[in-house]
Image (cartoon, rainbow, N blue to C red; front, side, top):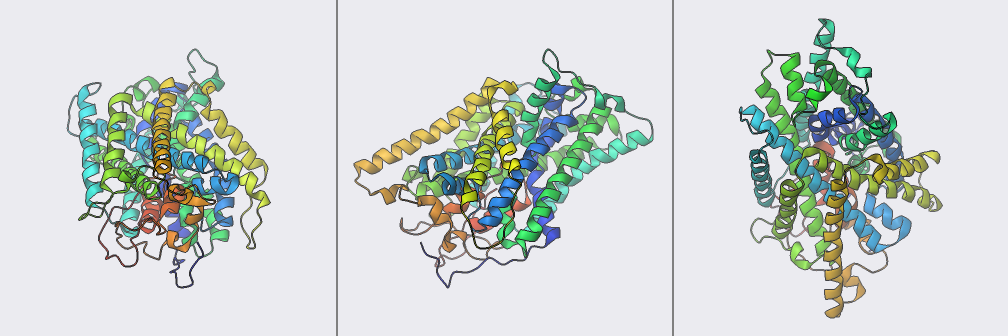
Length: 531
């Protein structure tokens, strides 16, 4: 669809400072709060090393995202890059559904972490019991209610959320500095490695495959490039700086944790950082830190469930999934069937998959597969020249990015089979729904364009100005039924809006508020944004 001349433009208001906060806010989240102990179980005292390796892998992939987002600033997102590079609609759909699935697994991870911290905050002895699962399920249902009612968020709110999450991690770092200054803790443990019955290399790789969950989120922040004042100049610097600062915080938190708590104790429960506070600062009110942790992981869960339901809604409205998933509630103006669908998936994950390491590892597995494709897409799209100047990554980096992501996806990293089964079931559900929709479309005699299979299809719609929407990033939005022929916000959904299951606050929610908008004739009824 051609771009109309009267289409509104996104306002370029983001300078380096606010953009940096967006990037950091996208990365920080459940991973470091919940998985530090699990990583310690893999490697022992050098718990910081897998986080550092995960940072290196994420940074290499970030270079590919930077090249693509500055090259196609109005078509950001993994699904869109996939379609531009390969032109295969089914592959584009798989990438989009994988990103959506990673959002649900991330939310389920956060739900389990929330339940564990809730029990600690209120002094409930529920560790290892069904009580944790019950609390997690109640939490998921509460998220569904919030999702159904609709949410409108602003930049100021998101800045506050990010500062609270960052503040919790800085408390841990401060406790570590205090312990170091007064001779507390055993900092010699930070160089001790315990690979068990595996080689050191295998142990570090297994830890990295899990720690990578803590680094995801950077890919979602590329959605902000179109609202940067000088994206080609400042965005690469701020994204890489944000990644580096997040990694620094993670390494410092990991060193503090292992210096104060032995690896076997750190990995014994689902609240590792609470244990660090108890040991390192006995006078500090542990309940307060438990609430900070609950807040951080709850925010991660909410924005990912918002994202997942809106993505399912968008795909269904393009006749790529069953149309029933695209229904909108007549009064709340929220995609209630998609909300029920994604909530049921999250409930199934909490009940049948269970623990934080399995769910967090599945999230990393799904996104590593997506990142491998994005790195290859960056190389393939080198043949597509654009007129404007853009960031260009050294050729070796997309090659290293694709190879490292693919390496971490495959079984030789000692990834539990549960993670592969979980990811396979989720993708399988998507494939079945896609096939059902396609067969139903053929029986109804609908043309190819009605099932999203026309040339360019969903991805090309993403590049239209209608898909990008107007400068409503700080406004509430509405979802209302509209004709099948109308251009939707599918683009951001399939590509940009979903890239970050972990992305807890700023970039994700801000991108969401511009992703989902009603047609210009709709009155502004508040609706949920996304992650």
